[in-house]
Image: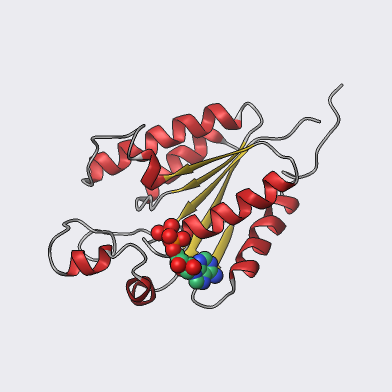
Length: 181
Ligand code: ADP
């Protein structure tokens, strides 16, 4: 069985639900015996992009490197799930152009909801001034203008978000396997 590679890119504020949705989608794909890889922003920053900070320059470099690895995997037939805030539109577009097989998922919940969830306690620290340049607080987030999928995680159940991602992958023919000849 040959598999078509694709990068599924989850972008959104911290706490919007990128990790939750991408992991759930990844598990479902894995249970279908598909080759997947997960590139989670938090983990990537501990190794591949260790040492980079949160200036625009460093954030763009972080995304460029994630995009580079995603490209290598995608062209070898892997389904790559990236979850990274990736706040800047231009670099997301750059990565999209480079990879080609690229599906953008805008994981969207209002800042107030993300802050209320405060999964990692980071919003509290940002509000207290302990963390500077925190996306949504004192650093920008540029929402996608034309994402393939938008998941409104304050309004929909996780299962609905997962369903939307799968429906789009089906529609774009990323899940229709062909037999190797
Ligand atoms: P991010 O990776 O974007 O920082 P996380 O996935 O770590 O966000 O956290 C999102 C939080 O929101 C989790 O606690 C999750 O259980 C919750 N949540 C509530 N509804 C949804 C939904 N529909 N989709 C994804 N996450 C949701």
